[in-house]
Length: 194
Image 1 (cartoon, rainbow, N blue to C red):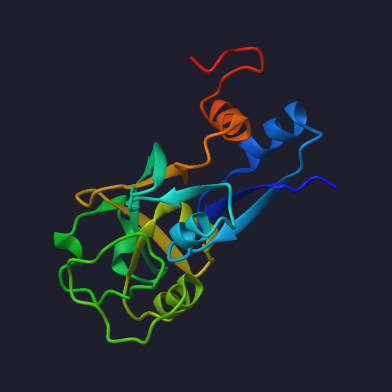
Image 2: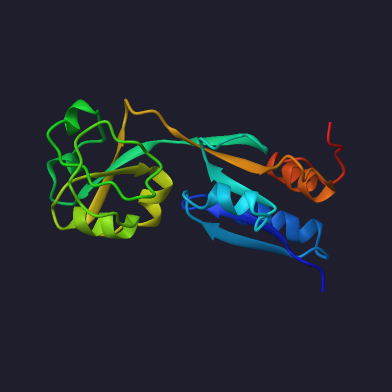
């Protein structure tokens, strides 16, 4: 049996549409989707565990190619009873007096005080927020993925977006890699690389 083409995807990224196109066009070449954390994304690529990966930027580009794909808006996740849940959007100034809970894989680097919590996952951070303690800031896709009825999220308008990109090793630039790039870029089956 042929070794699968392995595509990693960081939390919040959704490769399903592209995987579906791959499976239609290249049905004889198995594709395996592999979830990775932001902390694991580069190491898995560099170690050859993945052929390509949907990564959350920035990544160290030494030895890696990377195509930025799309930006994600940062959102503040709050408990449903929090005053911020009644507004459409927030600013950093609106959050100035809040205690921020930062999961180890949030996709965002804080500029405000954080609660002194041990490292935690995004679901654990959302649990803390749902209890009425603090606010967590994450990309919108992660907030949607971990959404609960007892939380709400609002766009933070003056924080920079995070970017999701497609990365692969520079020493691996073969026909399969180019085929997946073509799918991600929306090329038709008959179109050429150029």
